Length: 153
Length: 415
Image 1 (cartoon, rainbow over the protein chains, first blue to last red):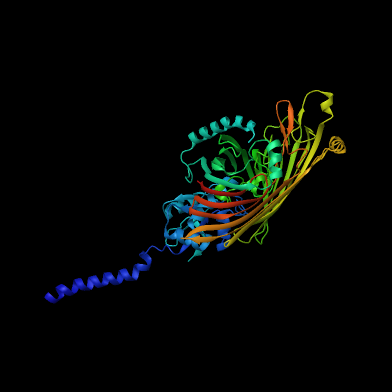
Image 2 (image 1 turned 180 degrees about the vertical axis):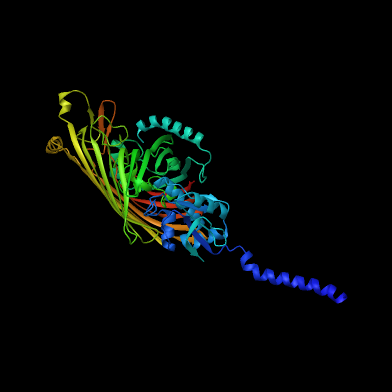
């Protein structure tokens, strides 16, 4: 009986450890993989990295093709893993270059800079509410009510 | 800077203040209706050596508009500090105004405050939008995009040709313009701007409130945007300033009195100005280059005043030519951008030009000597922060009235 007294907690502890290690990919915030999201009304089905960059930066056009809504880029406030992935792999620009770019565009084209939010949930909520919006969130974030057009690892 | 513009800075400041009251926050917030941006600089320059061209300097000393040439970085100065307010009236209707504060780029350190832009922008689609108000004349690249924005430039030297105090090209327009973009599947784009505005006045620096003449100026710009590098554009623009009246002065220093005097009627001129600006702008990962030229001519319409003066032995120039070429590298120092650059500027104006040297006074017009500009510049621009660029630059004047050597230090910022 005394032996069981020590064995049962050990088994429980081992089970918890196994369960945690098994679930770790689910629980770990996956900031390295992001998804590009647009509003559900936007007819665009998917986008390439190059197309996303040109659209987000409004390099050529201010409006979505076949949709006629003004492109509204959405960014994260402050550095986060999702932003690092987006800047590095999609925009291929350093953070200071992104900041400079959007300030220059305000002088030259009177364009609005990206709207910034503190969390993935806020980004999703904004994209859901604004037909022209385009943003990025971690793959693990809930994207209910918006359309995923690209996954970037 | 033309004094007429100073009268409109108060209403624009008022607009800025009122707009600020309605603004709930500054940049980047959802609730914002007005965005405030700006840029500025502090510059220190030192000049040394002999005059690049003593003969021209002697002419300038005798017949120059001021005792010191415009656009020289000497001692402490502010090249251009601007506040830009953008009001988002609706999704596709925007009002933007830009107020400029700067040290006079001539012989004094007087501060000036004036309005660079104040226009309403209505964009119907990517292919068609309209702007109306005061805007940068759509000629060339540097007039619309760089101008005196030190934070966006590698060199601290403003292009002489877009220095509005000289009036060599019409830098600003009050009127209306249409603009748009057509995009091909391959990522190429064709941008256009066409504008109509108040035309040239009796002297070239009176750009803004010229209503004495019922003449207009027509401008067109076509720009091919290529999908290479970060930003690659090839453009051609031109303008046509329809018949505008002025008076001829036969020689430098000549003052023509404008009164109802039959003797002076013989010097009344009706001119037409045409100009062309081709340019190439490339901004890449490893290097950048920029070339822009301009060529302008004035011709006399339905008259022989200039020809008669020529027949009497008075030279009357009618053209000017200028070119800028700059090459820079994009390097990194401690993870930040550092850009060594080299630039060459050349501007040549006929000494006794029939129009560009004219300055209107109270009831008279005087002909001044407008100096050439010919210089080689090189230096380093370093982005110590995202919104702060410092520069060190050497300028060597090859010709013209400036001293041969100049050294410039500048800290430029944007926000």
